[in-house]
Image 1 (cartoon, rainbow, N blue to C red):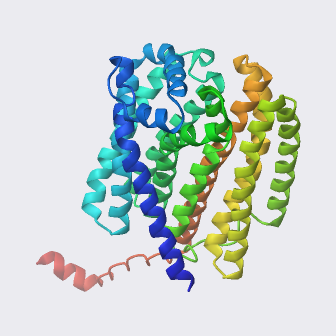
Image 2: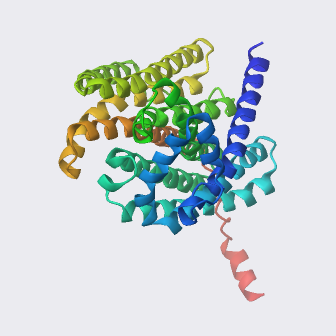
Length: 400
């Protein structure tokens, strides 16, 4: 009964992903046209004006005009190619599932090149724009920079894994890369939904609420997709665990200490801080509950490999809050940020960065298992030496 249910859920997830990507692609293609030519049609603005209000859209356009105007051409390249990536992603996923290898490889080259060029456009914007003058402020700038590095790093490691013949690692890295890319359409969805929850909240504050959990959600989605596609119960050469009980206890203690530092800091920020804290804690708790339940379920089912991956990601999630707590003073001192901005940025990047670290650890776990298997493989016996000729035979051979 479990397998058909899982298959149906996977199909629903693929259909939902495809629908979001197809809906967002034309929005990405046209999003920046009005900044280059005022009055040009933009599907995203039209939809947002009807789902929220024309005033909400007008304020957003006004606030973005200055930061975007200094890097408009690179941002247009970034946005248009981002729309193309939304179309390529579902095709790549379906071609991999249906084992259309040639199509998958050909489009994979296009996908990787498009990621690099699109992210180069975003990098130009970030380099040209001081963090404090970026749209939605320094915290949003920092989160965008981390997403950029995560997407580029993921597609690079994924490409190397494919080249080296590690399809399981290739799959993990590319799913994480696409998770980072999905922050763009998911952010637009939150632009439409959060104003109903917080009437009158400007777009800059909506963005700050969104970055509290987008990193956790997209990396969590990438992990769910990874586990759904990986049906193995073991990995050859994998022995023991890198997440034993003592490690998990220490991770829980570190996570509790991190939350103990973050929660009062957010509460000290008044209404805005409480709003951000809720946006951070609620998804964090949901992801924690699912990871812990899946790890326990894998243990009961005797699926050692699934349990190992769930536990490694659970440990990373726990450490994310501790990482964010440590990063608050680091960002304050290194970038000259005030406490509220540093707190928002640190919480916004923690889960995404630790999820990236978890995928790295899983990849190293697989590579270590394969190296152990290679060392244990029986070595071929050395070639037997040719028999030496007797003296008479050797003399006769020489005379001939």
